[in-house]
Amino acid sequence: MDTAQIFFYVLIALIVIYIVRKVLLYRSVKHYTPADVAAKLKKDRNVILLDVRTPQERKQDYIKGSFHIPLYDITAEQKELLKFKDKEIICYCRTGNRSLIAASKLRKLGFNSANLKGGIIFWNRAGLK
Image (cartoon, rainbow, N blue to C red; front, side, top):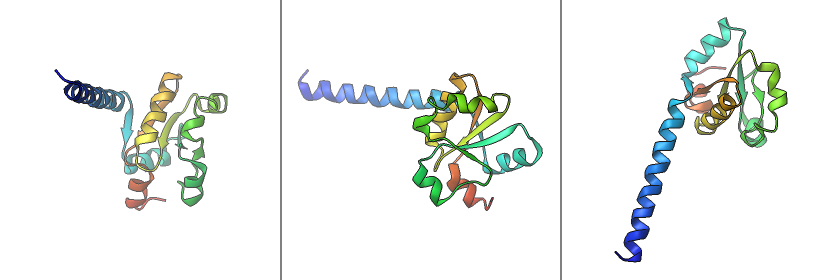
């Protein structure tokens, strides 16, 4: 076996590990559609929205009533989040990828968290404000 083949097999193994990890991460978190989140927000006071995008993204557009803690600050802002310990925290980002990571981190920290499928893009596409 030459170096190119070894490199190829290592690359394939890394891709498989990445995909399996992503699937397991996805399965470990609850996911809500924009319509589900809008309905939950109307009838349930124990739900909050958490925007995990960058401050620049937040300035462009955000879901009214949401809180903002960028993904890179989630662990550092754990004390700030303690006031929401008894609530379900539904995370959102632009497309749902970063919010999936945020929801997983929050779950590991002991919070009840979920992910908004498709992020703010799907929210806006659904015509919700």
